[in-house]
Image (tube, rainbow, N blue to C red):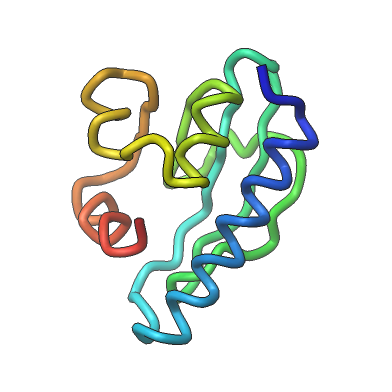
Length: 111
């Protein structure tokens, strides 16, 4: 099981990757709050996706987040480091993403 610090670092790594992607590909019209819930650690992080970037990342849950991702600590780390495919993780229910269908389509461009 990954630690809270490892999950926090994985999300920082994801934010850095999204920054690089936004610089190369241009902005994506998506401005939504995001919650990332780590089920096996009973912890959460939240932030905002703005222009294809993950910003204002901090500890704690946001129950009103427009996009919510739930997964285990190990699966989060594996997703961010490319060891677990997002599509397969969602279909196998290792990862749950709650968002409206239009936001999901835009998220696919980011991931």
